[in-house]
Image (cartoon, rainbow, N blue to C red; front, side):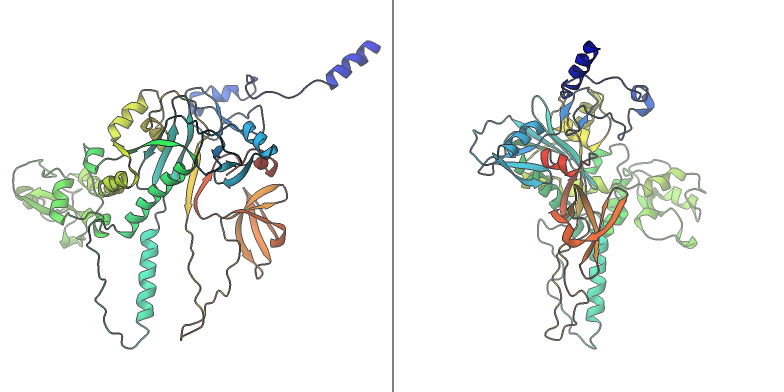
Length: 477
């Protein structure tokens, strides 16, 4: 009996801490991870040994902790450290938190600036931006940013409101100054916004990482889609195909060949896929080029009735991303002092190590990544700041319906209890705020929440959503 009691006391006193580098124990999810059809499911992953740290199993089999970014006391970026080191610095009060988007510490003492050569790879695009910072041994950060696409719609609404406002007067003298801008280097507002988003993201990463070189994938549309180069007709009307008229645009789009008989070096005519006699529009997606003989034989038939349905598919195919890169590629590399590369090189380098097609993987190989250990991928979203001035009742202006601006806006991150939540909205004259964490939505008094960070601009998030205790020790997005 005495012996059994001693054995139980030993078990009670044992150290239950499991180190992060300990091998994983086989569990009941092994059969799912070994199935080929589940390898591409991003949401399927095993938990780490340490709940404070989220570990991702990359394609190459290397594990790496999510890193914490470090700034020197003068604000210069240093090499990032592991969460355990960051917890030690915070506990010893040798560092302070300067940003949680992403989680960044600044040292309170001057540290020697020993940094490794870091290459930042950017996979530029029309709707998505892939980014990755790689050293010789590991990847420091990786992710994919989603660019806003509602700029043309907002500009159209602004134009409508301005027209309605000016039409309220019986007579307003016409104004002809500041009409158009043909100066060199001018871009349409939607294109300028996308260009600035690329630049802003690169500057953000340079502030938290000691980037020594930037490489951007640039390619004109005819290089990116060498077999079937396409340009969007809608973007032509929005000014994104400057330098092309309708005829030259169609000649470039269809390789200066008749879309029916494939003849070249013959006079070409603009062809309506759906004839105008049958209410066919004059938009670019209904136009093609053909020789005179084919145009006469087609007469008033549609392309499908004439036996060429694939021509319609080629006319409707969009290439907004290639059009965008064809316009701003050299401006982007010039403003960021970056080195350019091309898509076919990226594809070759991505296929060699067997990486899947994604913007983050493209950026990884653009930066020279091969078999380096990789951290958790960030998802970067962009939210409009909506920082417009309120209209006050003076000098004949109408008073604003919105009398005041509440301190919390939708998208902000707040602290409530031991967790962090996203703000949905404020109501009851600013006394209550609706907060949400996943599917859990609550309505609480605004005095009981604490602002963590505003949800405007670029926002870094991951699939890992820790509680407040984890946030304090490890940091979250």
